[in-house]
Amino acid sequence: MKSGSILIIDDDADVLLTAELVLKKEFRRVATERDPRRLAAALRGEPFDVVLLDMNFSPGTTSGQEGVECLRTVEKFSPDTKVIFMTAYGGVETAVKAIKEGASDFVVKPWDNQKLVATVGATLRFSQAAQTVKDLETRQRELSRYIGAPDAEIVGGSPAIERLLGDIQKVARTDAAVLILGENGTGKELVARAIHRASARAGNPFVHVDLGAVPESLFESELFGHKKGAFTDAKEDRAGRFEIAAGGTLFLDEIGNLTLPLQAKLLGVLQTGQVTRVGTDKPVQMNARIVSATNMARDDLLDKLQFRQDLLYRINTVEIHVPPLRERPDDIGLLINHYAHCFAKKYGKTVAPVAARTLDELREYSWPGNVRELVHAVERAVIMAEDSLLRLQDLLVQRRAAAAPQDPQQLNLEELEKTAMRQAIAKHGGNLSRAAQELGLGRTTLYRKMAKHGL
Image (cartoon, rainbow, N blue to C red):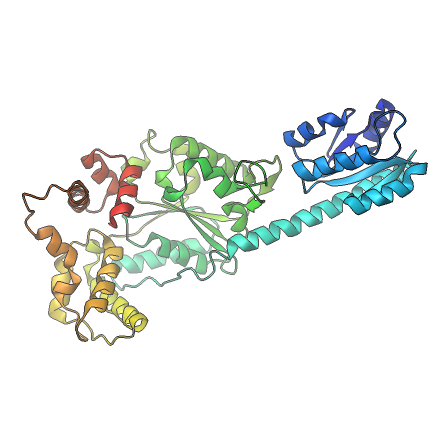
């Protein structure tokens, strides 16, 4: 398959026609331009790998300065593009000087066709190799952000967890798209990581993207990457999350928070298997396993006004449901003692196993925030404990706060909003879609306000 995009700049129409006829047999695309003043516009329009550039355009001019000025234009608007100068026989010395200015090579007019093709081909290969190195460096920089990310185990021995672990082992052996369903705080990311660890891709990156936290204006840049200068703040080339996850797993968390237009853009990539960085027209083959997660109820996912059904079919070859904590009360003791040990080690404390009577009472609590709420409660209890015992009142601060009678004089809007949100979430068993509907909010707005209030 032909590759390479070549732009030829020369004021001689015969030279342009001859070069185009020779080069278009060997390269994917060849464009020509007679007016050097239109060079900047041509480079802004679409990227070129190589520019074949005459050194002199004005009649009687032989200094080569016009060519050097065009070279500066290429460096400004397309710094990764390589330049080959074309010069008459007497201008070889000038061309050599121009190479010192930053050109990659030069050809002498009239040229030998085979030598012209060889020179452009060698420069193209150098350009592609340099771009490959740059892409790898960019990918490595972005990937370094994920090194050291938590890779905690799934704790539990209840029948619900045993079934979950069995499902993980089954799907991990394949590259099938997986959709993880579950309430907030149930551990959907842990399930995604467990699938990755048990898969043939375990030696490659696991890249987590919280789609609920990606601004709509930056969606394409974050996921697909961008080229330097593609928009105001694009100060360097950057690989998107799809490229960074090459060979590994891309975890699209909170996919239910995407608007319908963004769902359409994601669907396009999943259908074609290719991503194109913002500011380029070069598609890159996608090689990442897609695992998605959402706290949306199954009924909401089937509502075409909230979620595209064609996208749903792309991401849910296999569905895994993560049970809420209230459906596996037998795991509460294991979880509390496990995290108590972890936090005791972290904070340099000694903690005794939680008493059986205390655990019985903890199992009666509904845990609307699921495992995330339990982990925060245990951490707080370990920090505040006066001795090695973790007491019920230390572990259930949230329950006591919710049960406490409300001060009729409490009119602080922030506190009222926080209380209303907590009660709505508890009422609907952690189902955020229904809680948002009860509160008269959109799910994205509720998600943002929960983060604001630390819920």
